[in-house]
Image 1 (tube, helix red, strand yellow):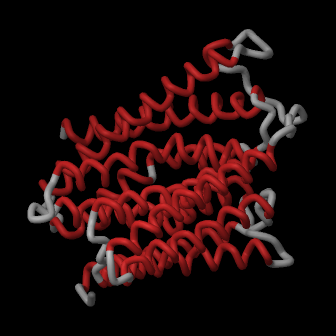
Image 2 (cartoon, helix red, strand yellow; image 1 turned 180 degrees about the vertical axis):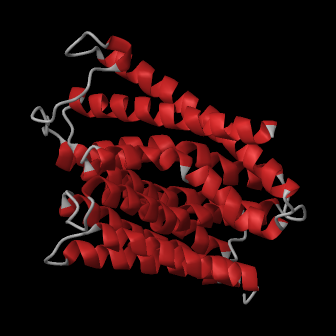
Image 3 (spheres, one colour; image 1 turned 45 degrees about the vertical axis):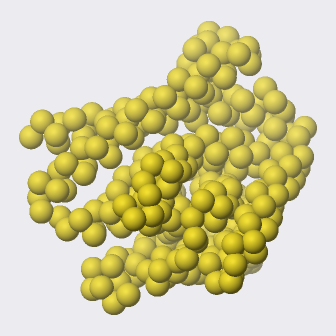
Length: 332
């Protein structure tokens, strides 16, 4: 019983941290004169994705190949983009439906999200295809190319957003300077750091307790490792997208997810390619394929004359369900 209570408390901590983070990251964009594209796709995406990036690195470096550390690391690397492209989109779609009470088009800048999706599909496909390369020297070249591709993406995103003050968007006062109309940049950075600490602490406690509860309930270890744990580690930090969607800031909400997808499909796979044999098992390839198909589906929605609608995001749940069915049935 105590574990369930602590689980609920940790969930509340994550929500509070996400609220503070979204407030401070918006002020960071205002202070740096950047638009929603850079704020959502770079600062928010990388900031909230950082905790998950440590999981594969620790697993690979801390556990040898014989102990299964490499397998855990590769699974964590591929699990992040998959969760973002499917389940995170699904949850954001639900938030959009609740906000609008209909299936009206998302209020997004299609150019920003299409750019994110295009980069994701390109770099992630390259990262997956690297698994089939014959020698390590070829894979090293791919790893370097993936990092270089992300640098180009970040540069283009920030450059295109420079000068967009967004002064027309009313921002709530910074929590650390509630009575000031224009808080100092140092206070904004301090609040970002504090919010990330709260989110990381709450997410760590959340993961710990959900593992204890599921094991106590007799949930198979396979399901725990492939489904429950990745969901617990990926989704909490994406509550920022839910908050932004509820506020009608859809570009920030989707950019938070799509930007993280680019980061998690380029820089992090590059680490896996350099530190492991990078030979992917059928189930890993299947999850990667589903992530790419889900991204293509959202991209087509962005190109549609009717615009991207919440229903497009809800289809992410269908792709995720396909993965769960395969895991449970053991087809692969």
